[in-house]
Length: 230
Image (tube, rainbow, N blue to C red; front, side, top):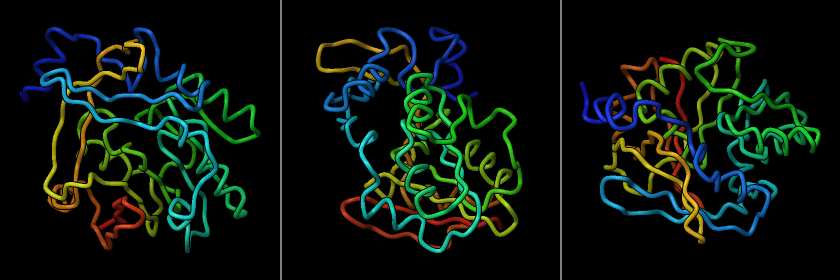
């Protein structure tokens, strides 16, 4: 058993998902787009700053590049308020957003976007038929185990489908941990498992998950990878 698994069975026996529980600062930040959030590691207290306003803004040119060449249905995993769903639909693509946050899903639905509230590990429409699945804005961290998430994504893709992943800036990073989301007032979510992975770790893990990395690139300070089913 990994240390993370042991912790989840011990002190945090009922892990929650990104930003949920507690004071719900994630939901509050979505309603107040200028609110800055902090992803804090429980073990060390280290934190990363998150610009929540970016999730509610329109997709920028870097985001739109991810959709180049896609002609079939797009699944945005951890869609938030749905900027990538909106972008895909604007290109004439069928798109579905998926998020565990009721607030995010309600905001996206109110904007006329096709979204579902739930987990990527739930039964989903079009399993094995998605032309593209997106794990951007750090969503490779969902569930705290990148290999498990990648395996699930491989099952969701069509035989010629593509998985697009946004990576850590550190190519050697491959880390699972317990974290919380906090805001500038000190409001804190419940503890949840999360992961961060760079290109080296992604390449190391991909083969065992039914995927292969075919391309990676850096653009506008962000690092992405394209994976196909092996």
